Length: 159
Image (tube, rainbow, N blue to C red; front, side, top):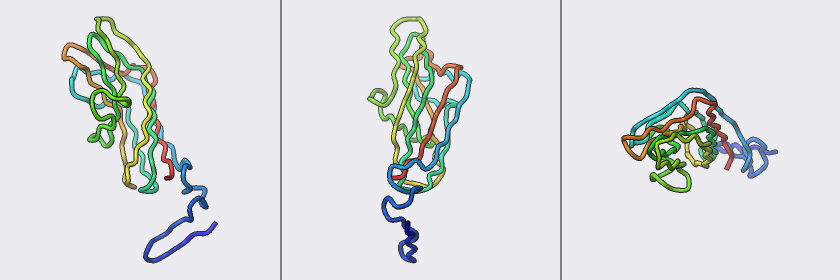
């Protein structure tokens, strides 16, 4: 393996020659697991306790986000999404193929597994936080994460 040190370009690794920086290699894993209910009656996304922070080693890295939890709703629909740094909704709008959605047309609470996966390109080496947010479709509803084990896993992938 060769390392190239160039005063004008900094330090570079020939493509695929460094096991720590070769494309598609997992560079680091961060995981947060916790118990406790986070619930809301808000029709706007609110943060939950399910969040983790990762500091990418390279600005070209991708971050694979995996969330596993159980969600509930009562009398209204509940939406789940992931925010980056508490400002950017990675799910975009209220309904798409990434944002999880629990439909409920009755008054009975429904407990449903919620698993989400998203590949982000943060383009930074600064600490980046990813967290699950929830909202309900109407003010008379209530949505929450279960008090069972909730997990968010962040994997830095070399690109």
